[in-house]
Length: 207
Picture 1 (cartoon, one colour):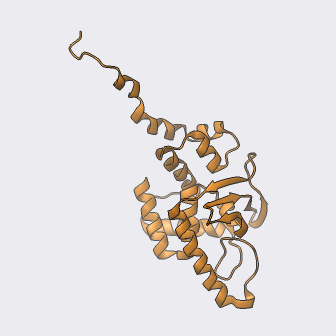
Picture 2: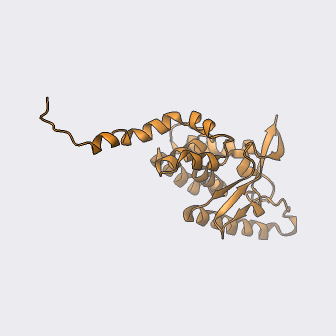
Picture 3: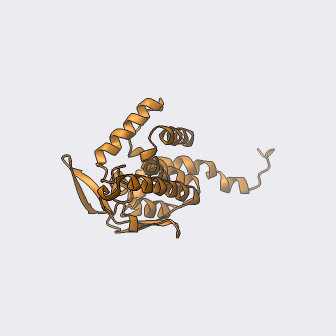
């Protein structure tokens, strides 16, 4: 539900400003957790309004591993809207303040989203912080991965076709996208199911 998504972002902005921008990006653009953790500075072009998903940081056991993106479709370019860009710019300003405090101790990871000490985020920490926010916000229980599903739903509701949803989410085939979001597609298209019938004039008095 968009209203619940909005409540979550409002709560995250107030109670976890450090990760607020990452959660917003995942919700707006459907990135996987590992893709957000692995996003690099040179993958993000806020002036041009897009980012490129190239790598992800996942875990084997509890050990973080950097590897190429999951999709067989390869690197994908994801356009960014003005509201998303504004939040990401604010995040970069905050990150600059962290770096100024750390001085020479700041590590040069090249990653876009980092901890206040400049070190990479552990993917599990992202999920733990998300779960904590959900629990304390009073919102219905959801998983971090559900934000990605929300992004797909909002894309469709906004008029994006299945090809655009596939490309944004990085699915290897449009069939995978269709299979994953069949119920969403049916529900959203129910409103236009009578479009043809509505165009055909009928005589209501006819037997």
